[in-house]
Picture 1 (cartoon, rainbow, N blue to C red):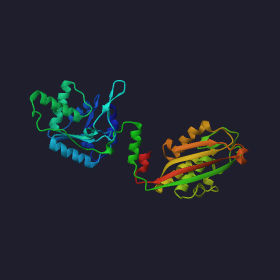
Picture 2: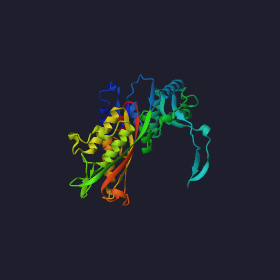
Picture 3: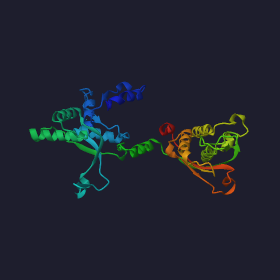
Picture 4: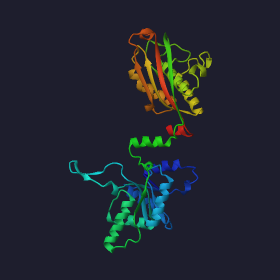
Length: 361
């Protein structure tokens, strides 16, 4: 039973389209808070089901062993949840932020999910909470409050044999809540790199009249462009050579010979995309690129952001994995005299398991 925002249900259903267990999933439109969402999903559970497990979708990395021991504890005690001891010192605060004393960490736990319950008990607890307008942030505390309320009104032992229990959780059950959590989750999805390599690329092109100036796939207004068989995008060439060099796959001239008429006037950004595809076909995933353009003119700073975006799209990585910097040679040498442009790039590639490209994109 999946409870989710009503407006998201069509998208979630589509994501499961064609899955072998698609028909086994029952959907509930979520409520205003977690408690109401669980209650609505619980209403779909068949009456003969003896045990219900509640789990946060925001905790996507659920180890089998944690699920197994949570279920076992719920079978024995009627209610159970995964939990971890706090690693940091926990203190109380007073109004105004004053220190209110330390708590005994040995008595404290950080409650996670999964949480498992006798289905009859969980239904009764949610019915009680709804009637009493009581709100809780998770089902374990809801059930515990319900049991305590029964004991107060009917005497000790009236709640039956249920005794909420905690079992060891797992750090991998981190709740994906902030952008930092999301970055961590994406990293968890990537298989560990078995091989990481660094490559270096450098390229030079002289200016020529009647040519477009293209750098990083961006056409830049200038009285001259760069001379070359392709569009002479010196930055894209340096990045391509860095990627190829990291994978020991030669250089751009080997794959796109300068005397081949097929590449006359070619967009170097398209050639860079082909280089990235060649690397992935060989089992290498581009990780990041850092590049520097050296030119006396024109001024490149206004175009750097667009260069990064276009290079990242061609390589198939997020834009925050591509760095482009520009500097001048301070009048030194041929570059300082404005005779051409140079670019240097460093690239990191990694060999990973299957499915890496889909995860990164």
